[in-house]
Image (cartoon, rainbow, N blue to C red):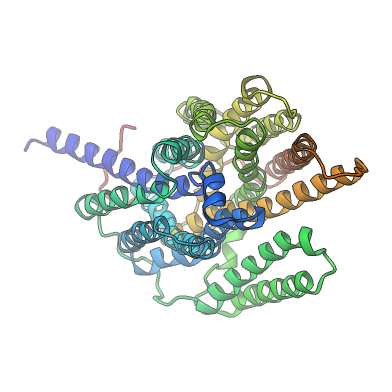
Length: 495
Protein backbone atom coordinates (compact mmCIF):
# COMPACT_ATOMS: atom_id res chain seq x y z
CA UNK A 1 0.00 0.00 0.00
CA UNK A 2 1.38 3.38 -1.00
CA UNK A 3 1.74 6.20 1.55
CA UNK A 4 -1.03 8.14 -0.20
CA UNK A 5 -3.48 5.23 -0.07
CA UNK A 6 -2.54 4.56 3.55
CA UNK A 7 -3.25 8.21 4.38
CA UNK A 8 -6.64 8.02 2.65
CA UNK A 9 -7.49 4.86 4.57
CA UNK A 10 -6.54 6.54 7.83
CA UNK A 11 -8.70 9.56 6.98
CA UNK A 12 -11.63 7.31 6.14
CA UNK A 13 -11.13 5.47 9.43
CA UNK A 14 -11.20 8.75 11.35
CA UNK A 15 -14.36 9.73 9.53
CA UNK A 16 -15.98 6.42 10.43
CA UNK A 17 -14.91 6.76 14.07
CA UNK A 18 -16.64 10.14 14.28
CA UNK A 19 -19.79 8.77 12.62
CA UNK A 20 -19.80 5.77 14.96
CA UNK A 21 -19.38 7.84 18.12
CA UNK A 22 -21.98 10.34 16.93
CA UNK A 23 -24.40 7.47 16.29
CA UNK A 24 -23.98 6.27 19.87
CA UNK A 25 -24.53 9.81 21.18
CA UNK A 26 -27.54 10.16 18.88
CA UNK A 27 -29.05 7.02 20.39
CA UNK A 28 -28.48 8.31 23.92
CA UNK A 29 -29.95 11.76 23.21
CA UNK A 30 -32.76 10.29 21.15
CA UNK A 31 -34.00 8.30 24.12
CA UNK A 32 -34.66 11.49 26.06
CA UNK A 33 -37.22 12.74 23.55
CA UNK A 34 -38.38 9.71 21.56
CA UNK A 35 -40.66 8.75 24.41
CA UNK A 36 -42.34 12.19 24.54
CA UNK A 37 -44.76 11.51 21.68
CA UNK A 38 -45.51 8.08 23.14
CA UNK A 39 -46.53 9.49 26.54
CA UNK A 40 -50.28 9.59 25.78
CA UNK A 41 -50.13 5.93 24.68
CA UNK A 42 -48.13 4.94 27.79
CA UNK A 43 -50.56 6.94 29.93
CA UNK A 44 -53.45 4.94 28.47
CA UNK A 45 -51.62 1.61 28.83
CA UNK A 46 -50.64 2.04 32.49
CA UNK A 47 -53.20 4.65 33.69
CA UNK A 48 -50.51 7.11 34.81
CA UNK A 49 -51.08 10.70 35.96
CA UNK A 50 -48.98 13.73 34.93
CA UNK A 51 -46.49 13.09 37.74
CA UNK A 52 -45.98 9.51 36.59
CA UNK A 53 -45.51 10.63 32.99
CA UNK A 54 -42.95 13.22 34.07
CA UNK A 55 -40.97 10.55 35.93
CA UNK A 56 -40.69 8.47 32.74
CA UNK A 57 -38.66 11.38 31.36
CA UNK A 58 -37.00 12.44 34.61
CA UNK A 59 -35.91 8.93 35.69
CA UNK A 60 -33.75 8.71 32.58
CA UNK A 61 -32.33 12.22 32.60
CA UNK A 62 -31.70 12.21 36.36
CA UNK A 63 -29.85 8.88 36.39
CA UNK A 64 -27.98 10.04 33.28
CA UNK A 65 -26.95 13.32 34.88
CA UNK A 66 -26.35 11.86 38.33
CA UNK A 67 -23.88 9.22 37.18
CA UNK A 68 -22.13 11.12 34.36
CA UNK A 69 -19.24 12.18 36.57
CA UNK A 70 -18.69 8.58 37.60
CA UNK A 71 -18.92 7.51 33.97
CA UNK A 72 -16.46 10.18 32.87
CA UNK A 73 -13.92 9.28 35.52
CA UNK A 74 -14.34 5.58 34.73
CA UNK A 75 -13.31 6.38 31.15
CA UNK A 76 -10.19 8.17 32.45
CA UNK A 77 -9.28 5.38 34.89
CA UNK A 78 -10.27 2.16 33.13
CA UNK A 79 -10.01 3.08 29.45
CA UNK A 80 -12.31 5.02 27.14
CA UNK A 81 -13.00 2.19 24.70
CA UNK A 82 -13.78 -0.31 27.46
CA UNK A 83 -16.13 2.09 29.25
CA UNK A 84 -17.83 3.08 25.99
CA UNK A 85 -18.48 -0.53 24.98
CA UNK A 86 -19.82 -1.46 28.42
CA UNK A 87 -22.18 1.52 28.45
CA UNK A 88 -23.59 0.88 24.98
CA UNK A 89 -24.02 -2.86 25.64
CA UNK A 90 -25.98 -2.35 28.86
CA UNK A 91 -27.99 0.47 27.24
CA UNK A 92 -29.16 -1.82 24.43
CA UNK A 93 -30.04 -4.70 26.77
CA UNK A 94 -32.00 -2.49 29.18
CA UNK A 95 -33.81 -0.87 26.24
CA UNK A 96 -35.15 -4.34 25.45
CA UNK A 97 -36.34 -4.70 29.06
CA UNK A 98 -37.99 -1.26 28.92
CA UNK A 99 -39.92 -2.22 25.80
CA UNK A 100 -41.20 -5.30 27.62
CA UNK A 101 -42.48 -3.25 30.59
CA UNK A 102 -45.74 -4.43 32.14
CA UNK A 103 -46.37 -1.54 34.55
CA UNK A 104 -45.66 2.12 35.08
CA UNK A 105 -43.23 1.29 37.88
CA UNK A 106 -41.36 -1.16 35.67
CA UNK A 107 -40.88 1.36 32.88
CA UNK A 108 -39.71 4.08 35.30
CA UNK A 109 -37.13 1.74 36.90
CA UNK A 110 -35.77 0.49 33.59
CA UNK A 111 -35.62 4.05 32.26
CA UNK A 112 -33.42 4.91 35.23
CA UNK A 113 -31.08 2.00 34.43
CA UNK A 114 -30.99 3.18 30.80
CA UNK A 115 -29.84 6.56 32.06
CA UNK A 116 -27.14 4.89 34.14
CA UNK A 117 -25.79 3.07 31.08
CA UNK A 118 -25.92 6.26 29.01
CA UNK A 119 -23.88 8.00 31.73
CA UNK A 120 -20.98 5.67 30.93
CA UNK A 121 -21.33 5.59 27.13
CA UNK A 122 -21.72 9.33 26.44
CA UNK A 123 -18.71 10.87 28.25
CA UNK A 124 -16.48 8.02 27.07
CA UNK A 125 -17.53 8.71 23.47
CA UNK A 126 -16.88 12.45 23.76
CA UNK A 127 -13.57 11.75 25.48
CA UNK A 128 -12.51 9.61 22.50
CA UNK A 129 -13.40 12.51 20.19
CA UNK A 130 -11.27 14.87 22.27
CA UNK A 131 -8.14 12.69 22.06
CA UNK A 132 -8.67 11.75 18.41
CA UNK A 133 -8.85 15.28 16.98
CA UNK A 134 -6.26 17.87 17.93
CA UNK A 135 -7.38 21.09 19.60
CA UNK A 136 -8.12 23.88 17.17
CA UNK A 137 -10.13 24.01 13.95
CA UNK A 138 -9.90 20.24 13.41
CA UNK A 139 -11.49 19.49 16.77
CA UNK A 140 -13.97 22.34 16.36
CA UNK A 141 -15.29 20.78 13.16
CA UNK A 142 -15.57 17.37 14.84
CA UNK A 143 -17.36 18.95 17.78
CA UNK A 144 -19.73 20.75 15.40
CA UNK A 145 -20.88 17.34 14.22
CA UNK A 146 -21.13 16.22 17.84
CA UNK A 147 -23.05 19.35 18.82
CA UNK A 148 -25.47 19.00 15.91
CA UNK A 149 -26.18 15.41 16.89
CA UNK A 150 -26.61 16.31 20.57
CA UNK A 151 -28.99 19.19 19.89
CA UNK A 152 -30.79 17.75 16.87
CA UNK A 153 -31.29 14.27 18.28
CA UNK A 154 -34.04 15.46 20.60
CA UNK A 155 -36.14 16.87 17.75
CA UNK A 156 -35.55 13.84 15.51
CA UNK A 157 -36.62 11.69 18.44
CA UNK A 158 -40.02 13.36 18.46
CA UNK A 159 -40.51 12.57 14.76
CA UNK A 160 -39.24 9.01 15.02
CA UNK A 161 -41.27 8.45 18.16
CA UNK A 162 -44.40 9.67 16.42
CA UNK A 163 -43.95 7.33 13.45
CA UNK A 164 -43.16 4.32 15.63
CA UNK A 165 -45.99 4.99 18.08
CA UNK A 166 -48.63 5.47 15.40
CA UNK A 167 -47.66 2.69 12.99
CA UNK A 168 -46.04 0.11 15.26
CA UNK A 169 -46.35 0.40 19.04
CA UNK A 170 -44.89 2.62 21.75
CA UNK A 171 -42.72 -0.33 22.87
CA UNK A 172 -40.73 -0.15 19.61
CA UNK A 173 -39.39 3.22 20.71
CA UNK A 174 -37.15 1.14 22.99
CA UNK A 175 -36.73 -2.01 20.89
CA UNK A 176 -35.10 0.07 18.13
CA UNK A 177 -32.05 0.63 20.36
CA UNK A 178 -31.18 -3.09 20.33
CA UNK A 179 -29.99 -3.44 16.69
CA UNK A 180 -28.43 0.04 16.72
CA UNK A 181 -26.53 -0.75 19.91
CA UNK A 182 -25.36 -4.10 18.52
CA UNK A 183 -24.02 -2.40 15.38
CA UNK A 184 -22.17 0.24 17.40
CA UNK A 185 -20.54 -2.38 19.65
CA UNK A 186 -19.45 -4.67 16.81
CA UNK A 187 -18.10 -1.80 14.71
CA UNK A 188 -16.32 -0.26 17.71
CA UNK A 189 -14.48 -3.51 18.43
CA UNK A 190 -12.95 -3.27 14.96
CA UNK A 191 -12.14 0.43 14.49
CA UNK A 192 -11.62 2.02 17.91
CA UNK A 193 -8.17 2.18 19.48
CA UNK A 194 -8.01 0.76 22.97
CA UNK A 195 -7.58 4.22 24.56
CA UNK A 196 -6.10 2.89 27.76
CA UNK A 197 -6.46 4.92 30.93
CA UNK A 198 -4.17 7.89 31.43
CA UNK A 199 -5.04 8.86 35.01
CA UNK A 200 -2.48 8.06 37.68
CA UNK A 201 -4.90 6.53 40.18
CA UNK A 202 -7.18 3.64 39.38
CA UNK A 203 -9.84 4.03 42.03
CA UNK A 204 -13.31 5.46 41.99
CA UNK A 205 -14.72 7.93 44.47
CA UNK A 206 -17.80 5.91 45.45
CA UNK A 207 -18.78 8.18 48.40
CA UNK A 208 -18.71 11.11 45.99
CA UNK A 209 -20.75 9.21 43.40
CA UNK A 210 -23.37 8.11 45.91
CA UNK A 211 -23.71 11.50 47.62
CA UNK A 212 -23.85 13.52 44.38
CA UNK A 213 -26.40 11.23 42.74
CA UNK A 214 -28.50 10.92 45.89
CA UNK A 215 -28.41 14.66 46.45
CA UNK A 216 -29.46 15.49 42.90
CA UNK A 217 -32.24 12.89 42.90
CA UNK A 218 -33.56 14.18 46.23
CA UNK A 219 -33.50 17.76 44.95
CA UNK A 220 -35.43 16.96 41.78
CA UNK A 221 -37.91 14.82 43.72
CA UNK A 222 -38.59 17.69 46.12
CA UNK A 223 -39.06 20.15 43.25
CA UNK A 224 -41.44 17.70 41.55
CA UNK A 225 -43.58 17.05 44.63
CA UNK A 226 -43.71 20.62 45.95
CA UNK A 227 -46.59 21.77 43.67
CA UNK A 228 -48.70 18.83 44.87
CA UNK A 229 -47.93 18.78 48.60
CA UNK A 230 -46.74 22.35 49.21
CA UNK A 231 -43.30 23.69 50.09
CA UNK A 232 -44.03 23.50 53.83
CA UNK A 233 -45.08 19.84 53.81
CA UNK A 234 -42.97 17.36 55.77
CA UNK A 235 -42.36 15.26 52.65
CA UNK A 236 -40.87 18.17 50.69
CA UNK A 237 -38.92 19.69 53.59
CA UNK A 238 -37.31 16.38 54.60
CA UNK A 239 -36.34 15.66 50.99
CA UNK A 240 -34.87 19.14 50.56
CA UNK A 241 -32.85 18.87 53.77
CA UNK A 242 -31.60 15.45 52.64
CA UNK A 243 -30.59 16.90 49.25
CA UNK A 244 -28.70 19.81 50.84
CA UNK A 245 -26.93 17.51 53.31
CA UNK A 246 -25.83 15.05 50.62
CA UNK A 247 -24.61 17.78 48.26
CA UNK A 248 -22.68 19.48 51.08
CA UNK A 249 -21.09 16.13 51.96
CA UNK A 250 -20.17 15.69 48.29
CA UNK A 251 -18.34 19.03 48.18
CA UNK A 252 -16.46 18.31 51.44
CA UNK A 253 -15.61 14.83 50.19
CA UNK A 254 -14.17 16.19 46.94
CA UNK A 255 -11.78 18.42 48.91
CA UNK A 256 -10.63 15.54 51.11
CA UNK A 257 -10.60 12.58 48.72
CA UNK A 258 -7.27 11.40 47.30
CA UNK A 259 -9.01 10.45 44.02
CA UNK A 260 -12.03 12.77 43.84
CA UNK A 261 -14.86 12.10 41.44
CA UNK A 262 -14.88 15.78 40.47
CA UNK A 263 -11.54 17.48 41.20
CA UNK A 264 -12.67 21.02 41.99
CA UNK A 265 -9.46 22.42 40.51
CA UNK A 266 -10.92 21.92 37.03
CA UNK A 267 -13.26 24.85 37.69
CA UNK A 268 -10.21 27.11 37.82
CA UNK A 269 -10.38 26.85 34.02
CA UNK A 270 -12.89 29.67 33.57
CA UNK A 271 -14.23 28.44 30.26
CA UNK A 272 -15.04 25.07 31.80
CA UNK A 273 -16.98 26.56 34.71
CA UNK A 274 -18.65 29.19 32.51
CA UNK A 275 -19.67 26.74 29.78
CA UNK A 276 -21.03 24.21 32.29
CA UNK A 277 -23.04 26.91 34.06
CA UNK A 278 -24.36 28.13 30.74
CA UNK A 279 -25.38 24.58 29.79
CA UNK A 280 -27.30 24.16 33.06
CA UNK A 281 -29.34 27.29 32.37
CA UNK A 282 -30.12 26.57 28.72
CA UNK A 283 -30.99 22.92 29.34
CA UNK A 284 -33.32 23.95 32.15
CA UNK A 285 -35.36 25.85 29.59
CA UNK A 286 -35.00 23.63 26.54
CA UNK A 287 -36.04 20.32 28.12
CA UNK A 288 -39.51 21.77 28.69
CA UNK A 289 -39.95 22.62 25.00
CA UNK A 290 -40.49 19.07 23.80
CA UNK A 291 -42.45 17.98 26.89
CA UNK A 292 -44.86 20.95 26.85
CA UNK A 293 -45.09 21.26 23.07
CA UNK A 294 -45.92 17.58 22.62
CA UNK A 295 -48.74 17.82 25.16
CA UNK A 296 -50.01 21.02 23.51
CA UNK A 297 -50.07 19.56 20.00
CA UNK A 298 -51.60 16.20 20.94
CA UNK A 299 -53.86 17.05 23.88
CA UNK A 300 -54.95 20.59 22.94
CA UNK A 301 -54.76 20.69 19.13
CA UNK A 302 -55.42 16.91 18.85
CA UNK A 303 -52.58 16.22 16.39
CA UNK A 304 -51.62 12.61 15.71
CA UNK A 305 -48.22 11.34 16.89
CA UNK A 306 -46.87 11.33 13.33
CA UNK A 307 -48.12 14.83 12.56
CA UNK A 308 -46.57 16.03 15.81
CA UNK A 309 -43.24 14.45 14.93
CA UNK A 310 -43.24 15.80 11.38
CA UNK A 311 -43.91 19.31 12.62
CA UNK A 312 -40.97 19.10 15.03
CA UNK A 313 -38.66 18.22 12.15
CA UNK A 314 -38.13 21.93 11.52
CA UNK A 315 -35.95 22.08 14.64
CA UNK A 316 -33.15 19.70 13.51
CA UNK A 317 -33.25 21.29 10.04
CA UNK A 318 -32.65 24.73 11.59
CA UNK A 319 -29.96 23.28 13.87
CA UNK A 320 -28.16 21.58 10.97
CA UNK A 321 -28.15 24.74 8.83
CA UNK A 322 -26.26 26.58 11.55
CA UNK A 323 -24.12 23.76 12.98
CA UNK A 324 -22.42 22.90 9.68
CA UNK A 325 -21.36 26.50 9.13
CA UNK A 326 -20.59 27.68 12.65
CA UNK A 327 -16.98 26.30 12.82
CA UNK A 328 -15.93 28.76 10.10
CA UNK A 329 -17.37 31.63 12.11
CA UNK A 330 -15.74 30.37 15.31
CA UNK A 331 -12.41 30.25 13.49
CA UNK A 332 -12.80 33.95 12.61
CA UNK A 333 -14.28 35.49 15.77
CA UNK A 334 -13.92 32.82 18.48
CA UNK A 335 -16.66 31.12 20.49
CA UNK A 336 -17.32 33.85 23.08
CA UNK A 337 -19.41 36.19 20.85
CA UNK A 338 -21.49 33.22 19.76
CA UNK A 339 -22.05 32.14 23.37
CA UNK A 340 -23.31 35.64 24.13
CA UNK A 341 -25.70 35.94 21.19
CA UNK A 342 -27.04 32.39 20.73
CA UNK A 343 -28.79 32.16 24.16
CA UNK A 344 -30.63 35.38 23.30
CA UNK A 345 -31.82 33.81 20.05
CA UNK A 346 -33.04 30.74 21.93
CA UNK A 347 -34.84 33.00 24.42
CA UNK A 348 -36.54 34.87 21.58
CA UNK A 349 -37.88 31.57 20.24
CA UNK A 350 -39.15 30.53 23.68
CA UNK A 351 -40.78 33.93 24.16
CA UNK A 352 -42.63 33.48 20.84
CA UNK A 353 -44.11 30.09 21.82
CA UNK A 354 -45.13 31.46 25.22
CA UNK A 355 -48.07 33.10 23.39
CA UNK A 356 -49.68 29.95 21.94
CA UNK A 357 -53.53 30.13 21.93
CA UNK A 358 -56.07 27.41 22.74
CA UNK A 359 -57.42 27.28 19.18
CA UNK A 360 -54.09 27.77 17.46
CA UNK A 361 -52.17 26.07 14.69
CA UNK A 362 -48.62 24.83 14.54
CA UNK A 363 -47.35 26.81 11.55
CA UNK A 364 -48.72 30.18 12.61
CA UNK A 365 -48.32 29.96 16.38
CA UNK A 366 -45.41 27.60 17.10
CA UNK A 367 -43.26 27.13 13.99
CA UNK A 368 -41.67 30.62 13.88
CA UNK A 369 -40.60 30.36 17.51
CA UNK A 370 -39.23 26.81 17.12
CA UNK A 371 -37.26 27.81 14.00
CA UNK A 372 -35.70 30.75 15.83
CA UNK A 373 -34.93 28.50 18.78
CA UNK A 374 -33.35 25.86 16.50
CA UNK A 375 -31.05 28.43 14.89
CA UNK A 376 -29.84 29.48 18.32
CA UNK A 377 -29.40 25.87 19.46
CA UNK A 378 -27.26 25.01 16.43
CA UNK A 379 -24.78 27.74 17.31
CA UNK A 380 -25.03 27.27 21.06
CA UNK A 381 -24.33 23.56 21.46
CA UNK A 382 -21.31 23.58 19.16
CA UNK A 383 -19.78 26.64 20.85
CA UNK A 384 -20.46 25.51 24.41
CA UNK A 385 -18.90 22.10 23.72
CA UNK A 386 -15.77 23.77 22.41
CA UNK A 387 -15.58 26.13 25.40
CA UNK A 388 -16.15 23.37 27.95
CA UNK A 389 -13.41 21.11 26.57
CA UNK A 390 -10.70 23.53 25.40
CA UNK A 391 -7.55 23.70 27.49
CA UNK A 392 -8.35 20.49 29.41
CA UNK A 393 -5.47 17.96 29.80
CA UNK A 394 -6.06 14.70 27.91
CA UNK A 395 -5.99 12.61 31.11
CA UNK A 396 -9.03 14.57 32.33
CA UNK A 397 -10.95 14.64 29.04
CA UNK A 398 -13.43 12.13 30.47
CA UNK A 399 -14.02 14.42 33.43
CA UNK A 400 -14.56 17.47 31.20
CA UNK A 401 -17.00 15.66 28.92
CA UNK A 402 -18.76 14.15 31.93
CA UNK A 403 -19.15 17.58 33.51
CA UNK A 404 -20.65 19.04 30.34
CA UNK A 405 -23.13 16.20 29.97
CA UNK A 406 -23.91 16.36 33.69
CA UNK A 407 -24.68 20.05 33.37
CA UNK A 408 -27.06 19.34 30.51
CA UNK A 409 -28.93 16.46 32.15
CA UNK A 410 -29.07 17.90 35.67
CA UNK A 411 -30.11 21.31 34.33
CA UNK A 412 -32.78 19.66 32.21
CA UNK A 413 -34.10 17.55 35.09
CA UNK A 414 -34.27 20.46 37.52
CA UNK A 415 -35.71 22.77 34.85
CA UNK A 416 -38.40 20.26 33.88
CA UNK A 417 -39.36 19.76 37.51
CA UNK A 418 -39.52 23.51 38.20
CA UNK A 419 -41.37 24.40 34.99
CA UNK A 420 -43.82 21.52 35.40
CA UNK A 421 -44.55 22.86 38.87
CA UNK A 422 -45.10 26.32 37.43
CA UNK A 423 -47.43 24.83 34.81
CA UNK A 424 -49.45 22.99 37.47
CA UNK A 425 -49.74 26.06 39.70
CA UNK A 426 -50.73 28.35 36.82
CA UNK A 427 -53.35 25.86 35.64
CA UNK A 428 -54.86 25.60 39.11
CA UNK A 429 -54.92 29.39 39.58
CA UNK A 430 -56.66 29.86 36.25
CA UNK A 431 -59.43 27.44 37.18
CA UNK A 432 -59.85 29.03 40.63
CA UNK A 433 -60.13 32.49 39.09
CA UNK A 434 -63.01 31.32 36.91
CA UNK A 435 -65.15 30.86 40.06
CA UNK A 436 -66.99 27.99 38.43
CA UNK A 437 -70.18 26.72 40.07
CA UNK A 438 -70.05 23.47 38.12
CA UNK A 439 -67.37 21.14 36.82
CA UNK A 440 -65.07 22.85 34.30
CA UNK A 441 -65.79 22.19 30.64
CA UNK A 442 -63.30 20.65 28.25
CA UNK A 443 -62.55 24.14 26.92
CA UNK A 444 -61.97 25.46 30.46
CA UNK A 445 -59.45 22.68 31.12
CA UNK A 446 -57.69 23.31 27.81
CA UNK A 447 -57.53 27.05 28.44
CA UNK A 448 -56.15 26.47 31.95
CA UNK A 449 -53.49 24.09 30.64
CA UNK A 450 -52.43 26.50 27.89
CA UNK A 451 -52.11 29.24 30.50
CA UNK A 452 -49.72 26.95 32.31
CA UNK A 453 -47.73 26.50 29.10
CA UNK A 454 -47.55 30.30 28.76
CA UNK A 455 -45.94 30.70 32.18
CA UNK A 456 -43.61 27.74 31.68
CA UNK A 457 -42.25 28.93 28.34
CA UNK A 458 -41.95 32.52 29.57
CA UNK A 459 -39.85 31.52 32.58
CA UNK A 460 -37.77 29.27 30.33
CA UNK A 461 -36.96 32.25 28.10
CA UNK A 462 -35.51 34.09 31.09
CA UNK A 463 -32.87 31.36 31.55
CA UNK A 464 -31.37 32.33 28.18
CA UNK A 465 -30.97 35.94 29.25
CA UNK A 466 -29.06 34.86 32.37
CA UNK A 467 -26.91 32.49 30.27
CA UNK A 468 -25.92 35.35 27.96
CA UNK A 469 -24.79 37.43 30.95
CA UNK A 470 -22.78 34.48 32.21
CA UNK A 471 -21.02 34.23 28.86
CA UNK A 472 -20.18 37.95 28.94
CA UNK A 473 -18.58 37.94 32.39
CA UNK A 474 -17.08 34.42 32.71
CA UNK A 475 -16.12 33.03 29.29
CA UNK A 476 -12.68 34.09 28.07
CA UNK A 477 -11.64 34.60 24.46
CA UNK A 478 -9.34 31.75 23.55
CA UNK A 479 -7.58 31.40 20.24
CA UNK A 480 -7.36 28.05 18.49
CA UNK A 481 -4.35 26.13 19.63
CA UNK A 482 -2.73 22.75 19.19
CA UNK A 483 -1.86 21.14 22.48
CA UNK A 484 -0.33 17.97 23.63
CA UNK A 485 -3.65 16.31 24.17
CA UNK A 486 -3.63 15.27 20.56
CA UNK A 487 -2.25 11.79 20.19
CA UNK A 488 1.10 11.92 18.50
CA UNK A 489 1.38 10.51 15.04
CA UNK A 490 -2.24 11.12 13.98
CA UNK A 491 -2.69 12.70 10.60
CA UNK A 492 -5.03 15.69 10.33
CA UNK A 493 -8.58 14.84 9.39
CA UNK A 494 -10.16 16.67 6.48
CA UNK A 495 -13.58 17.15 7.99
